[in-house]
Length: 366
Image (cartoon, rainbow, N blue to C red; front, side, top):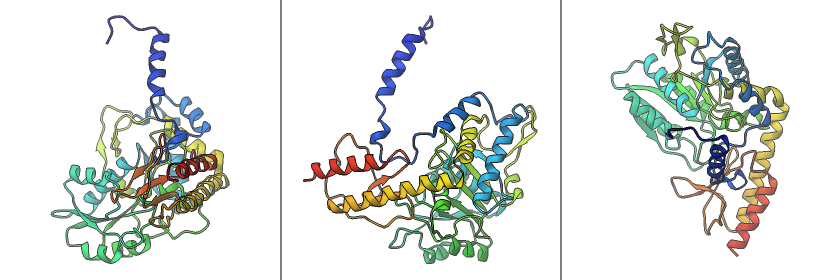
């Protein structure tokens, strides 16, 4: 820290230089986050200083949080679902396993989850002392339901299914996993951090949410395809009693109990998430998702023309390829754990960007 403060000009000159070192979204093809909608930015700015960690002081912001929970609960066929705004999928998944462990008491608890599960579950299991029973995927990169059944034992407290896997964009067999959870009296969590804001707006899809009666909780991230500002996640729970299992006393705050993981929680992204949903509505969100899916199919067709064979036909807007050639700079893509090229067609990856990328691929692999 300087002895004397810097001028505003010096500060923003430095910040501008650092911002210029960040990769432009025009070349980011690997991220599940996107440029926030202008409506989200405007709403975020209005609630910049509000703190959901002390909701009695910010009643209006707390009302917005509950409105977001209600909107998402209804979207996921759980109008009576409860929950709260999290910092994203990692926090939501940690909290889901906390609930599972508290509600389904086992001597040495374990969770049955797919090989494709997000790495946040390893963090959660390390923190909570839960063993991971990892299940292989089938030929289409979905959780193998038969293998999941075999992985359940007397100490299993939870099954996890993924709706829109991070690496391959697939939806696990949620209905089958739900029946399994019901048969064994297990907590069933669906990680829809990415797919939750995609799948409801597709023309045809299999049930993945509270329409499956055994689903206990669901994670969704409005800061992904919901185009809110970062960080904006949400954990939804079918029954309030499950969430109450996480409650602790908060004697010096305006409320005397809380069930969240974070203490101080920003109101800005929550207002942004609600604003986008209400501004776009079902029709607007369908248009966004359909545009992303069209771009995904165009990308797949173009890449296959250049010899990059698709690994699997995705359920959502994530495309993976067997890479026979190089990816030219400055494009930023990623690879799956199995070494497959991975591209996410987010709202900022519009048709012109897809065509420019395909031209560069063609030239560099001619």
